[in-house]
Amino acid sequence: MMMQGIRKAGQSFLGKLIITVMFGFLILSFAIWGIGDIFQGYGRNSVARVGKAEIGLEQMRTAFQNDVQALTRQQRRQITPEMARALGLDRQALSRLITESVLDQTAQSMRLAVSDETIRNLIFDDPTFRDASGNFSAARFNDLLRSNGFTEQSYVREQRATILRQQIAEMVVGAVQAPGALQELGHRLRNERRDVTFARMAPGIAGDIPAPTEAQLKTFFDERKGAFRAPERRTADILAISAEALADAGSVGNDDAKARYEQIKAQRFTTPETRTIQQITFPNAEEAQAAKARIEAGETFDAIAAARNIAAADLTLGTFTRPQVFDPVVREAAFALAEGAVSAPAASAFGPVLLRVTVIQPESVRAFEDVAAEVRTELATSRAAGRITEIHDKIEDQRAAAKPLAEIAKEFNLPLRSVGPIDPALRRADGTTEQALPGGDATIQAIFRSDVGVDNEAIRLPRDTGYVWYDVKAIDPAREQTFDEVKSQVETQWRADQVATRLSAKARELVERLDKGEAFDAVAASAGLTVEQASGIGRQEQRAELPANVISLIFGTVAGKSNSASSADGGRILFRVDAATVPSYARTTQEAENFARQLGASVSEDILAQYIAVRQAELGVSINETAFRNATGGAQN
Image (cartoon, rainbow, N blue to C red; front, side, top):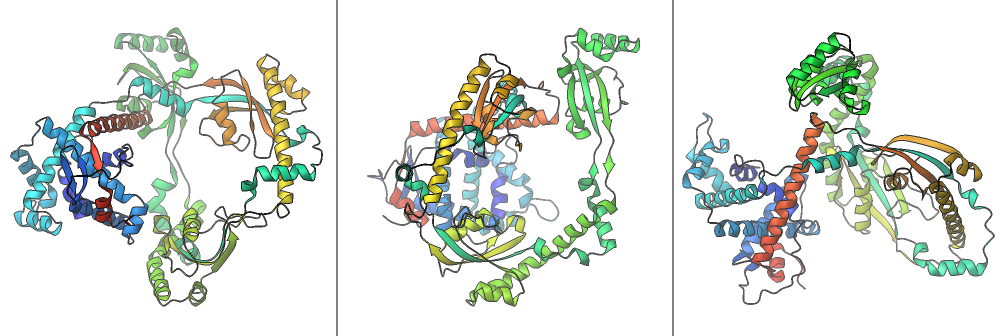
């Protein structure tokens, strides 16, 4: 943590872009691998050459070890070099060093420099180096540098380099903002809504499928043997502890529950007031004031909007809580209005406006009696979380003594779960599915990475809520199955394939009729289909009646046109896109401001990545794979 604090010292005052944060993005952008061991003529202690500079063996080793230690602190468990290499930390560290070298040489070629006064102010202003009285302490400065492996000279050198890298980044992208057109496009992608008319084509519409011959099935099987291959399956014992499982809500007294309720009431059980706000923008204050006078004389807000050619759909900004309204002038004016009232002209960030609040939803608070059970459970879970580490350590002691999980579970009165044989998708050989495992995908992946008899490290549950231990008891290898073993599956798949082919042909015929102008109701009736409608569908939305693949195709179909997509039940869904609407982009909201900022950051990262990639190509990069493996402890070829 102190090392991180010291490194931040050279960055805290440098502007919007933090180079070291961007490196995490940049390393994904450089195609430096596969260059080969072309380090002929270079020193054996050089891992890479960037232009005229070399990255040394010790420099690479130190960077890799620092990253491993940082990940260990973050994960709160020991990360071995083997694990770090499997995660790609070795390549990330080298990519970062190459990026730093590219920027350093760019700064040299541009004759950039940092004055001694700047470095001195940086150090003296850093609170990390201050004593209890708030003054700079030379003794503390030297102690911290020494304990983190720095000399004064090396620390100053690193800060100079960091500042110069930052200056180059700000030179390239310091003033970049997301263009308005890009914001509008992003707004459209996030907020476009579509209305559709659709009908389900059940598998039965395909009609009777004649029974296949033995020869047909064998041919179908031979063409798809891989699809009928038996996957590897494993059997394992699992022991899990979690705060939720250990929690005893009945042990939480009423006074404790009420005290906890008061602590979290505002954040958890209070729904803030919301207001639906409408806005008319004017070119100047005089026109806004004149419109306000006309409203006071009896003309309606809607009539004023219509006279200014503002569509009804564009009149409403949306429904917001007070903090969600970004513009402070609009916020204060709107939240001072009575429902239905029109504000005086307000000087918003985009010009004079008149505001009207059409709906006010008052703040509401859920009573303690309504949430008492939830509060007790949460408090009991919080208390149980404090016991997790103690129980974990006791179980680990038993594991170190080579006790099997079954004995440990019995000793601590914990449930032991035996699963399998299952494949990585939790499917059994009989087609049934095992219930979800504690730890989810992490547990199943760990089981399939391990082996019988291996002493496995416990898996930490998300948010430090518990642990999962597992022992692999048996492994059934993957194998090809014979036709006789899977004949029933082959016939089922053959029949599904025939149904899909017939339905697809029928759907194409119906789509052609719809696109020629026939009414959807008439086309659906001719095929015996029931017509349904769905409105306001979002691009990323999930609806029970419309699977994700159907929604994706709905947004890939031009409004007014028709299409069809397969459904999970083996049928198809025929649809027509009736309308595509996009609400107006109101830049005065906090949401819009956040979105513009995120887009701007993404654009900046893209531009900076391209700039550094070009400089990298100009300077030339070569990798000494042998030295790289030596520095990171990788296996030798």
